[in-house]
Image 1 (tube, rainbow, N blue to C red):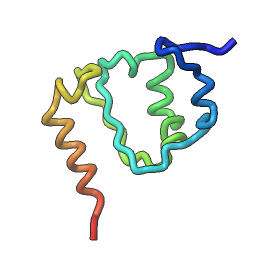
Image 2 (tube, rainbow, N blue to C red):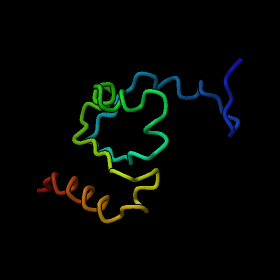
Image 3 (cartoon, rainbow, N blue to C red):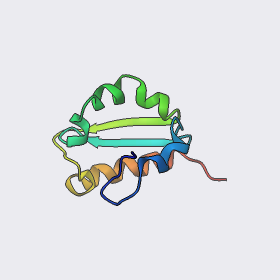
Length: 93
């Protein structure tokens, strides 16, 4: 029996992408109060090398202090600064 989520689709639909890696340059920002950051072994995965293995072009991982899940609303100036800095790292000829 397939595991069905709240939308009625099956996790089997994502099977073709199992083991895939994110191959584009990536900036990851999360708040230290985000429940996802404290979920299972998320911190160990993010900081212990698992995340970098799955996202080989991870340029930076930023953990914002005293920020929850909606970091773009809680600290918009910080998020904007980080994203703009990330974009400035790309040179377009």
